[in-house]
Image (cartoon, rainbow, N blue to C red):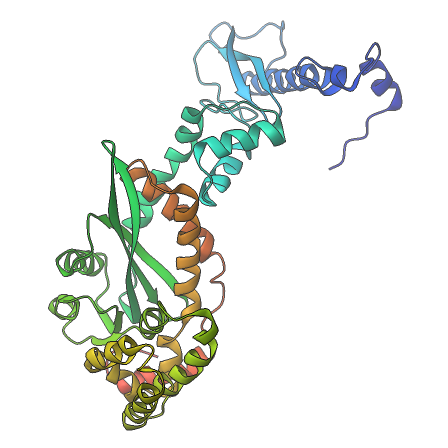
Length: 404
């Protein structure tokens, strides 16, 4: 509720103040008022806890006040030194300023939010100084964001659903600077479409390189966390990847990710050709049948091979893993071709990579990537469009493996 403060009280508080700094500065009235109000709240909490007013007699065997301890807290404006009341039995747990809390609620979240958006420790330090007038050490910022690691561990080990109609696997390369040497690291990501048609990031793993052997470990962990069946697994063109999936989920249908194919096809296309070439490529992956897709790929080749021969070579080389796509109904195709989740992940991660350059260690990668991915996941509030119709198609194609 809104608290009404009388004009008389305001006049009394600012009496003698000549400048704005006297009111809101580091030694101003507001800082002293905040300190006094918080200490009053703490004393009131202790009175409630003990059950008697200060300087009043109490039962001889009951609990009692036991002086104060000092504590410095960080607010959005400044540091404040508080006197924290104590009780003799050590059972008093203040709510206004909980034990071990060094900052007001909301301040840590500001630091974490900036970290999630790819700001470096020095950038966060400068931002807090400029906007809030607070000098915060890089160590403090690192300590605040370290709390995220516990969230990551809990999230990474949570139980998963028994069935995912579609699962996407992807790896993103980031730079790590350990022992004074900059190296590439592969961040493995698994994204599922669950039975409710919602996108769900299943986990995140870090390795020195991307390889089918490590993917086998990832997929095995996913199974150990409760996933009994995957209907369609969408992958990139990594050698040995299909075999890794089949070793854990032998019934899963392997589909080369159309989004990856499009992205790789457009990698070296000049800006002036981009729009026209993409329009022609759509006739390939949006064909109704495999024969139509092959025919349209030949037409694409006759038009573009002289300038971009590697594109048709890419599609022909991977055709065996592309062709299952054309056997799916339109409803299932739309689920496989749901680019929003993949692109929102990549966009979030690219921003982090662009801002950071190189990460100091794997823990920094985990913290940054997890926060960025959780930000991206906030947009996944609704099921995929027309999901019920798609689920019926899954139930028909994968008879006995989908329970409606």
